[in-house]
Image 1 (cartoon, rainbow, N blue to C red):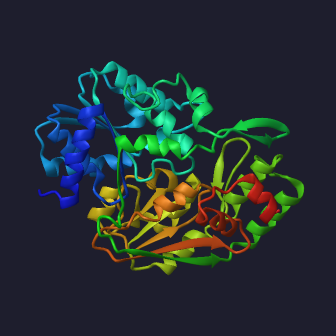
Image 2 (image 1 turned 60 degrees about the vertical axis):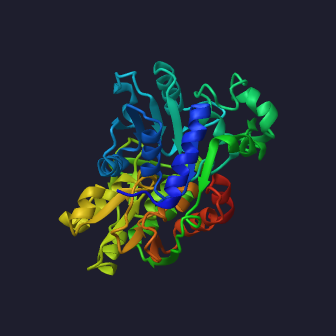
Image 3 (image 1 turned 120 degrees about the vertical axis):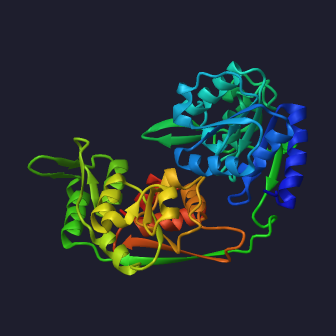
Length: 408
């Protein structure tokens, strides 16, 4: 295979940065070829064994790129949830795909701790972080992405709180009557300090000229769905023969209504069920004869899709690419690291509260040669989805405050 010219340049400059610091951040946007580029860097640095950490659904595509390049080094590609199964400690490069998922704060999440420990158990490996959106919600997300790397620029801070003393404007917020510290206002200096370790490359830089058109379609749900939602809003509880729907806090009410308006519910017992197949039936009828990628939020929405579509729907990208089947992916697990380039359209059964989910998932069809992408949002008439859509389009997560102001 032949690297693109810009990939060759990034491989050269990225190898130089990694050689100097044992650390590199590849901030390359989706579809610009991050995987092949980092494999090229590993080859340039004469690595012998590479550990590639990613999401489960991305493994097939990454291994395909590895086989295409056919480098001389060994590679173990594994999902983050399986880190604990790794027994080898002879990796000379560790690649962390979608590294922004390590960026929880003020406390590190389990994944960030596991990556830190993996770096420690190996003998001074090169560490390459990769993400098209390194800090999608706050610059404060950078600290725990890099805190386990020996040569990171914030290594003098023993924890996030000391880092925040210099790099975060701490605010006070009132939540459930208690005042808590809000550490989300990270300084621009965080990114400036990271510049020496970072290579950024956008789709525009790579010559992409594709556009995304969005269309919102509204579905009339069953009358029983609206009656159930109205009763819950009024009484905050719906009791059945065997199960109870409880919404005794604003957050629970928001979640339950979000489920119900798309036709599913999770009961207080933990059981769940499909209440209304209107959205699934609408999607099947509207997009008959088209190859579509469907994003859903709640697991029972997948049950509804499987019930309506039968054998014409799958949940694995490889099967989607090699058959005439449509694919259904959960929004958060499918928003990163996969390509749906073979889809005619993307169709959203529901919408996530996260602005990150909105901006990342809608770009799954983009390729350098594809000039036009069409995305459909399927919202229930009178439901909560449109209000969520308005928030995330403005790059803001939909919160309980939005819910109280716009829907109640």
